[in-house]
Image (cartoon, rainbow, N blue to C red; front, side, top):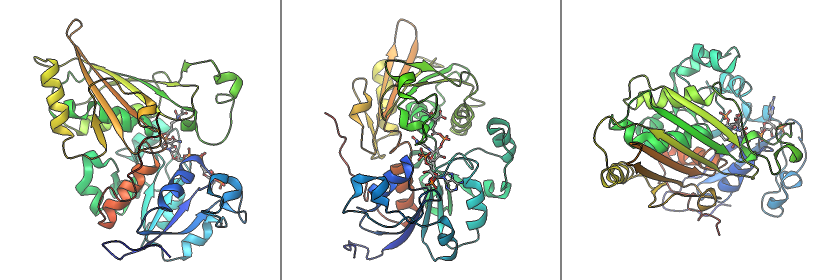
Length: 352
Ligand SMILES: NC(=O)C1=CN([C@@H]2O[C@H](COP(=O)(O)OP(=O)(O)OC[C@H]3O[C@@H](n4cnc5c(N)ncnc54)[C@H](OP(=O)(O)O)[C@@H]3O)[C@@H](O)[C@H]2O)C=CC1
Ligand SMILES: CC(=O)N[C@@H](CCC(=O)OP(=O)(O)O)C(=O)O
């Protein structure tokens, strides 16, 4: 039995796709959350096994048996997390949309503004176009009020989370030339999911470092849409991701040209004012590294004015599995359930 806190409510949740990287991070956070009972953790490939057989770190902590995702369709859940590949999640949302449960989808299936844009960038037909009108983009630093009212959250991508937070204060104040945004991003290997592939094979990544998805990565449009929504007309983004030979973490370095006069003091004030009431974004005085945020729900940002080139360099670091996925999903859940937003999310970063 969970210990009860100020509000006595205990909510029942299911994690669909719990054998994957983000699903297991969700389980880690939720099994310590004072208002949550994990009712189901599901797997299609490992149904009937114990969760801790697949994720030994949970031995003696969460030994629950993995169920087929079919069970959640007939149960009375409060929140369902979908930690599934894109293209699969939308089938679940379609089936579950009429249920009582609130849905938090970690995939990209409902993040974009229309099914047409989705189909253009994901090269896949959408099976539930109706879902787009109800989905709320789950970035609490931008959409806290909408998230509180929502029943379907499109949890942001990991690269977009870091990219948007690195630039949001500038965009929201209309300070940037909209075609000047260049984002150089790097991700740890867990960003690619639990299944091994040629790209993530040890021999191909060890002591190696390279760009991919040049000019075509689907996160480009997700970032452009959100920067445009922040008030920057038709933001055009040059986004280049790179795969880092590390386990987890995302580092974004964004370059922009300001519209008017800029200096370091003014720049820092813009960032501090914008993030003053946002508990999980820390404005730093020097460039953060990925280990500064590893294992935590923080996004560390550092804005730098380069007087010589007259460019702003905005750096952001997150843990891709947490602020880039699982802890962001729990933050959204807290807001949707009317809980204090930091509940269950106070882990201190692991470094050093
Ligand atoms: N990894 C990251 O850093 C981030 C990931 N995301 C997104 O979150 C989602 C989950 O990512 P991640 O945890 O990395 O992915 P993983 O590949 O690690 O895990 C996905 C899980 O989905 C389950 N699954 C696969 N196919 C099906 C299916 N047809 N029906 C039911 N379940 C299925 C698998 O479990 P089983 O085979 O046991 O059923 C698998 O464990 C993805 O959409 C991803 O793009 C978002 C931000 C960051
Ligand atoms: C390192 C790596 O491979 N990362 C993934 C992005 C992970 C993610 O956030 O993808 P979704 O938008 O699908 O949720 C990629 O580039 O495809």
